[in-house]
Amino acid sequence: MDYKGGMIMTNKMKLISLLISFSMIGCSLEVDNPNSLLESDLSDPSAAAAVANGAWNTVLNGIGNIMIANAVATDEVVWTGSRDAWRQLDKGGMTNVYNEFVDGAWPSISEGRWMADKAVSILEELGADLPDDQDLVMAYVTAAMVRVYVADMFDDFVYSDKTEAGNAIGAANMSQMYDEALTLLGKADAKADAAWKVRVHGLKARTEHAKAVWGKNNPVNTSAPYVSAGASTAANALALMETADWKWKMNFSSGTVSNQMSWQINGRLEMDLLDSPTHPEKGGDPNKTDPVTGALDTRVLAEEVIFRSGIGGGTDYAPITIVSAREMHLIIAESKLAGGDNAGCLTELNKIRTIDGLGAYTSEDAGAAYQHERYANLFIQGRRLPDMYRFGVTSVMWDAVEKSPAGSFFPIPIREIRANPNISQ
Image (tube, rainbow, N blue to C red; front, side, top):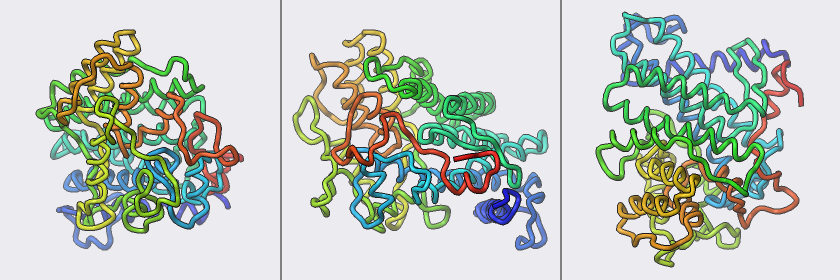
């Protein structure tokens, strides 16, 4: 199909429709007839907050769609349903361009990236006419965040602009998405108020760390898996966090967008967490035991309860943690571990354990302790597959037939290959 033809024109209209529909949530856009909105109407200063929020919700929709495809390939989620493409991912098969669920998630995550960049462009162009510069901060953060999730989960990606076909970034160049995110976060930091500044610094630390982890998986380096990146930024973020267990979450609702990962697990029941108590015949990885207490890790159990709780009023709205104080401590602890300060690593990890009233590490192996704390404190947050690769961890569900080589993430899927003349299979 010609890239300027039906598929992309349909996507263009879909994008505009999505932006307009999301923008109307709590919007006071000054137009005579909201049903006749054009893309150019979104440059009206009165639409600024709506544009920022519309981009945010579009990105959340895309992240929820791609996160479940990523999660089922890890030891956090197991396939319990009937669809073969989910089974392939559950078995560790990441590289099939025809996988229908990666292919199906592509439009929403691509739309999220486009919409976020569109919001940045619109709000920057308003200049002094922008009513509230925190809307631009939100747009910068949104555009940064979508890049981090894409770089974490894809081996290649494309930036297209409506009917203009983009080129593949290239597997060797995917780390540039983290650099782009950091540039956007720098712009956000310069304008951010206190509420946004803590989020910016937390996401910046996560991005710096994620870029370094990317380097440990390209190629996979299990002999020296630890990184020191992001520690100073994480310390700055911690200083801004008002509570010991501070978290910033994506919140989903019937009035905005749903979380596809939540629906697939809680609603459709196509997947389940860990070793599915309702489908034990499907296998799955059990919750890991705490290295100090010897019991099943209570942090994972607590997150499982939240995920299944029906928060938001249904099965489709479980929140996703973006960054947290716990992750900042983990980044600092890993920096110490990478530098050979095992005692310092354990001390930092104990700051997390204090939050939950758990016994302290004393003489445990620092590497094993650190790996467990990442598992326990970042459960269902999209971090697990890169960690599994760099730490040499496998899922009991992976098999030799389906499993892709360690370090494999999602490819550009077949719908983009067929539609984009710049991409070949």
